[in-house]
Every structure is written in structure tokens, then in C-alpha cells.
Image (cartoon, rainbow, N blue to C red):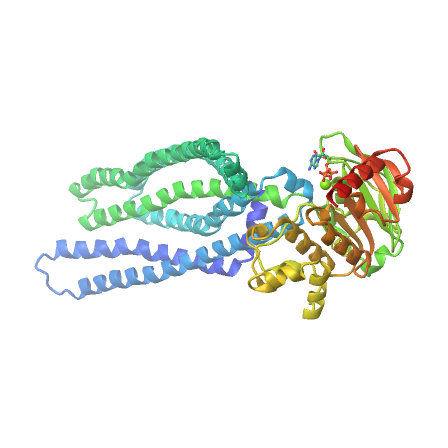
Length: 583
Ligand SMILES: Nc1ncnc2c1ncn2[C@@H]1O[C@H](COP(=O)(O)OP(=O)(O)OP(=O)(O)O)[C@@H](O)[C@H]1O
Ligand SMILES: [Mg+2]
């Protein structure tokens, strides 16, 4: 039922176009079914008047047929425009909604769903909706009017002959229905094969360097072939069925003609029917086959559309719980009392608790450092703090406000994250930085940010300076340059807490020092949370947490921690040796 509600809601937006289309379709069919009547008159006139005297009536009849034919062309064109255009609009509108929804969905959804499969839903599955909302709806009204008007005209001429024609129509329709249920099952399969293939294409092309680096071309091509074969299997099954059904539908016209000629011919011999009437009836029978064929199409379009709607709804129905939350009147004040983490625990869906019993406070103006081995849960903690991962009630608070109750937009304004895995849009350096700004930045402000992010010299060397395009995901840049552009993006607006998750890992010692000195000025962020493997980056923090297997195992300032035996001390000692060895 919800599928219909969804469909009608989309169609209702274009009710005027559809209403005009429906009127045009009825007009077309009305005109089409009046042609055989004129045909009958012309033929009967000719057979009753073989000498061809007084042809005014004949001329009148022929003019009418011609005018009707011309009018049908015009009105049918109008009806197609009135159905097809809204169909395309519905597709575009739903696509917009889907994309917007996808940008709001939580990290967990994106972790579970491959990009390629989502693209396939957005590009392929939606086609079913477009066809249904355009061609399908048009066929529906076309069939409705044709299948009511044509049999009515046939009935007027001869009820017995009409009933005689119904039999093959019902048989063929039954066959089509049967075939369609088989087809639908395979359409579902084909859709999921398409999603699989699309997922595979995206993942292998985005990792094409790895594929080449490890000489995996053959293996990848083999897997692609396998998946493509499975897709083609389904496609062939569907087209085989179509190839079987279409000729049956196409030949229905001939079957009907044979029936009408047999029984109708008998009526003519018996003088119950004129030749003109027989011609008229045959013309109706021919008109009848098109909507019957259309009915076959319509059932396919209907099924395909419903499969598409199901697939679209799996995205639209995903919950975005925090979207309903109210905006805070003054989000900038949210960080006035700092951030409190109270006994935070977190588990990924279906997994063991990864973070356990974590508690700390970051006051405005403070810097918190987090050190931990690879996989100790640092990024997971960061994603809990910035709201990317759902946390339990009462575990994280900003003053008196619970983090879970904050609108995502407010939260993004008050907590900004430069994540470990940098993402750049394929746009210019400048635009990649400005994505982070709230409102416009003057050229001077932008240059100040570029300077602060240690990008100034490099940007000066780029061929088009700040307007240089960074390529797909920043492919034209080095890892360190990407990280600093992401940092610049975070510095483009003032915030309460700035989180840097391993951001300084890809830069050299000098640059790291410079960046730290700039960030520690805290003129864009009131407080800082620096996650790092390197003790050096944390030395000046007001408080440092050492994370191990999702728990805080040590806590304090640098001076105390290097005195205590433990991870911090040993990491420090190792890194001291490393840097001594370098100098
Ligand atoms: N989306 C996810 N679903 C399930 N498990 C995950 C997910 N993301 C991370 N993990 C697991 O959580 C653990 C901690 O990962 P996390 O990224 O938080 O570590 P980290 O301390 O940031 O490591 P690194 O220093 O390498 O950045 C890892 O064992 C990882 O396998
Ligand atoms: Mg990490």
C-alpha cells in the first residue's frame, strides 16, 4: 500500500499535466474509433453505387477521415508530452530527494552500503519509476479508453461477433499475465545483479592503483566477467520471454481477422451484414489488438516501476533520527561550558563493545591530546564526539545539552573534525577550502587560512594557484597537501571544538611544528582535541589520554606521563631515539 501512496504522491504534483493528458488520450481514442464508421460508409457507397454517380458524399467521408487522422496526430502528440514530461520530472524530483536523504544518512548506513550499489539505485532503479510515471500511466488511460470505446462500437454492430472476439483476447491476456509473473522475479534478480556489478566497478576503479600495484588485473577482470555473466543471464531470460510473448501479442490481430472474416463473412453471405460493416468490424478488431499489446507492456512497466519504488524506498525509509530535532537558537553558545564525556561505551552494530567507560572533560580554551596504538579506538571515539556514530543518552554533553538531542547542523557548527581520511571534492583548491566556511570569506581571510595551514608556498607553485583543480578526490595532490587543505577547510569558520584526527601524520617535522603553533593559537577554535601517534604533537596539551583497546589506561600531562611507566613513556622514548638518530 505504501508503494501506491508513494506513487500517487509523486503524480499528484503534476495533476494538471496528467489531467490534460487524460483528456487528450480520450479525445484521441474517440477520434480513432470514429474512423471505421466512415470507412464503412465509403465502402458501402462504392459497392451500392459502382457507377460512381454523385460523389459529394464520398468526398465528404474522405475529408472527414483525413481530418480525423490529422487531428489524431496533434492530440496524440499532446497526450505524449503531457505524460512523458511529468514522468521525467518525477524522476528528477525523486532523484533529488534520494540524494539529499543520502547526504543525511548516518555513518552506519554508508558503512553498510556500497557506493556502487547506491549509484545503481539512483541511476537504474529509478528508471522503472520514470517509465511507470510517464509511459505507464499513459498506457493505462489509453487502454482504459480504447478498451471501453472499441468493444462498445463493436457491440453496436454485432454482439455475437464481439463475444466471438473476446475469447482469443482473454486467452492471450491470461498467457501474458502468467509470463509477467516469471518476468518480474527475474527483474528483481537483474536489479540486484546490476547493483553488485556497479558496486564492483566503483570499488575496483577507486582502488585501481592497488589493482595495478599487485598485478590483480586478471583477477579483477575475472570477477567482473563472472558478475557480468550473471547479469547477462538474467537479462537474456527476460528478453527471451519478451521475444516469445511479443509475437503472440502481435499476431493476435491476425487471429482476430480470421475469426471476424469467418463469422462476419458468413453474415455477409446471409445478407445480415454489408461489406462496409464487415470492413468496419475488421478495423475495430485491429484497433483492439493495440491496447491488448499495451496491456502486456503496462503489466511489465507496472512491475518494473514497483520494483524501482521498493528499491528507492529502502533508502527513503532509512531513519535520520536527528533530522526532527529543533535548531538551537544560538549554537555558538553551546560550547560555553565545554564538553563532558561520561562513562562512554560504544559498540559497532553486531560487535563487541569497542570503547568502554571513557570519561573526560574539555573546557573552553583547553587542549586535549589522545595517544593510542593503531586500532585502539581513537577514530571511533572521535566519531562519537562529533555525532557521526550514535551514542547512548547521557554519555556526552555540551553544557546542559545532551549531544544526542542536538540538531546535526548545530553540532557541526560547534564541533568540527579534520578526519584521518581526507576527502576532497573534485573542484578547485579554493572551493575545497570554502566548503567549510559559513558565508563568504574575503580574499584576505582566505589567504590567512592558507598561510595558517602551511599551504602558501605550495599554492603559489600550483599552475593556477588557488584555482587549481585537485582532480578526483584530490588525486593531483600529495597526502600532506590533502591533509592541509582539509585542515584549512576546518579553519574556515569559527568553532567551539576542533578535532584533529591524526592530521599531522603526513607532514614533515618543520611543518608539523608550524601547524601546531598556528592551531594552538586557538583563534578559530576555542578548544582542541588532537589525536596523534606522535608524542611531540601532544606535548603542550592541557590533558592527555592514553587509549588502549578502547579504554583510557593513562591520563595526565606530558611531564607526568613521561615519568610513569606505560605506553606513553615507551612511545616517547622510542620517538626520542628516532628523532635523535635523525639529527
Ligand atoms: N565501521 C566499523 N564497523 C566495525 N568495526 C569498525 C568500524 N570502524 C572501525 N572498526 C574497528 O574498530 C577498531 C578501532 O578502530 P579505530 O579506527 O577507532 O582505531 P584508531 O585508534 O583510530 O586506529 P588508527 O590509529 O589506525 O587510526 C578497529 O579494530 C576496527 O577494526
Ligand atoms: Mg584512526
